[in-house]
Length: 202
View 1 (cartoon, rainbow, N blue to C red):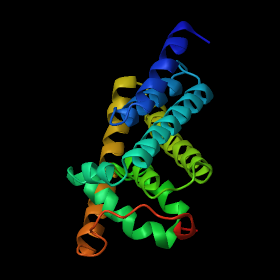
View 2: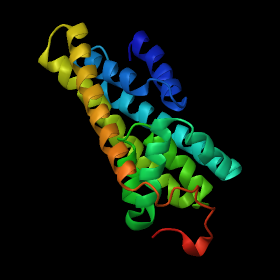
View 3: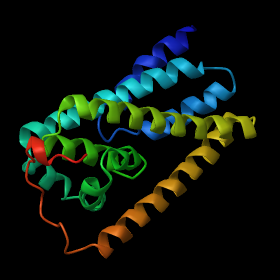
């Protein structure tokens, strides 16, 4: 492993752990560098996925400890409110898969982790879902950069192409979630109360 790779891996982990850090842009950049042979694919994917899972665990604990207060704080921002409303209405019906899908929605990863903590989901139930969502989303962001770096030899142009595609997809996902939130307005708008063990989604 080169010195630059050894230095970049801890940085990738820290960015992935910190909520609201530009993790997607960093992973896209890593993918571009990997396409040119400057970074190894597997170590970056592993470290980033572990960082995202650690971030999920932090947000889960916040939801578990603070409960409804954490959910109300999320609702103060439009993206957080839309993601939380979208998740709340679908979680009971779809269960675990919707939490994995939420990773690809702006603010959905944070909202999902806080919500499951506030609802009292057991940690043993949350961890596999977090691992699956973190891994899939990490591969998605990294491969966007890898594709851009492969298509364009210039790393700067590859980065610009990949970030543009990632931004467009994020905007589209956000718009769809906001549309779904507006369509369901007036239903389940209240912050859900912590669930008992017997009422957890299957």
